[in-house]
Structures are given as structure tokens and as C-alpha cells.
Image (cartoon, rainbow over all chains, first blue to last red; front, side, top):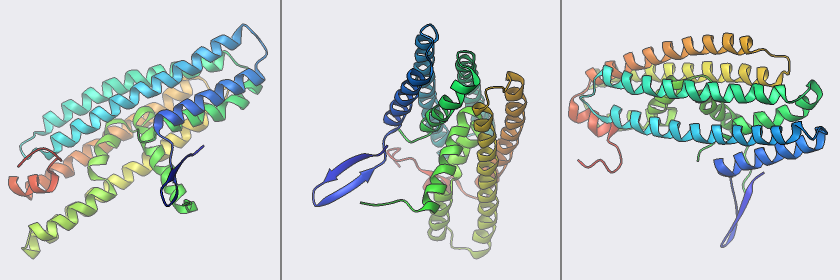
Length: 137
Length: 145
């Protein structure tokens, strides 16, 4: 969904921000879960897992933004050594690895809480959630 | 009201996949790739024209930039590909953790290789320029003189 900003002298369309996109996708995924999952024991667990995935993806983007800034600053230094750059990239890789493990774990939590039919209704929203995390802040 | 053309939309999707790649696949190579994105390479080329007047040296720098550009695009394309495969896997209810492990292991190996090649080229470019020229090309906003 696009957020519409009316500017003086005309109207412009602005793309929704990452946090708006994440919130929208999570909200629609939850609404879909409420529509297709009738088991009242699994539903609250599903809601919590969706919120958890949204929080995990949001937290990783901050790590990514920080690492990218750091790499740009290092690259700008004429005297930076390859070892210094490798060290920053290795540190980023380690944090990414942790975040990825968490995201994949969360995915399997969702899978375990659904059957194949329920998942076919929910999967497009997980995809949207993951893609939303890739937007600019 | 502006509308995005299908081509722009497609390009946007590729960029999103590249960015997504940094979490699931792509990692540090994709992050490093932002230093040598299409737009940055274009800016660097324009700045080099003003900065380096000797034709042979500029030609040699252009050659290195061509290879950096090609490598950066190749990395983006590989990571976009891996991201698509991963998204397809996530849609399947019957996919097992082992399916993810296999795909991610392959993606990680490609990431390390891309990162190594990008760093090789970054340091090759650095060797072709003086410290002052390098700083003029890559000075960070707000970093002072």
C-alpha cells in the first residue's frame, strides 16, 4: 500500500517507509492467520511468531545500516589496510549469521504452527514481510 | 501523480532482492557492493575525468573501474538469484532445514568469493591513485578536508 502525501500545488506519491511496510505486512499476515486458523490454541502462538519475525527483521536492518556506514567510512581512508576492512566485514558476517539463524528459526516456528493449506495462505505475507525489510528506512 | 514503469518496478524489485540478500544471502559482499554501486561508479568516472589529466593513466583507471563494475553487477545478480531461490523455499511447507542449509552454504561460498574479488579490485584501484586523489574521490560527507 502506498502512503499518499498531498503537496501544495498537486499530489505526489511517496513510497511507504520500511517500518510502515513491515507493520503493514505483519498486520496483514496476522489478519490472514485469524481468517484461516481456527484453532484457538495455535492462533496466539502464530500471532507472537509473526510479531517476533517482524522484530527480528527490523533489528537486523539496523545492524546492516551500521555496517554499511562503517565500510563506506573505512573505504574513504586512503591508508586503510585490507586486514582492517576484512575485520569489519567479518564482524558484520558474524552478526548476520546470528540474525539469519534467528529468522530461519522463526520461519520454522511458523511452519510448525500451520498445516500446508494454512501455510499456502500465509506464505505470501511472510514473503512480503521479508521483502519489506529490504526497503530503505 | 507519478507511476512507476514496469521496467523501473522490475529494477526496484532487483534492488530489494539484493538488499534482502544481505540478511539471508549475500552478506558482506552485498554490503561492500554498495561502495561500488552503478551510481557510485558513474560518479567516480566523472570525478576522475576532472582529477586525472594523463590519458594513459585514466585509461588504466577506467579499465579497473570496468572490472569493478562488472564484478559488482555479477555479485548483485548472483545474490538476487540466491534470494529468489530462498524465497521459493520459504513458500514450501514441506521444505526441511537441510534444504535451507544446502542453499545457504552455497550462497555463503559465493559471497566470500565475491567479497574477495571486490576487495582485490578495490586495492588495485587504490594503488593506481595517490592518497589525495583517493580522498577526493571517496571523501565522506561531513568528514572535513
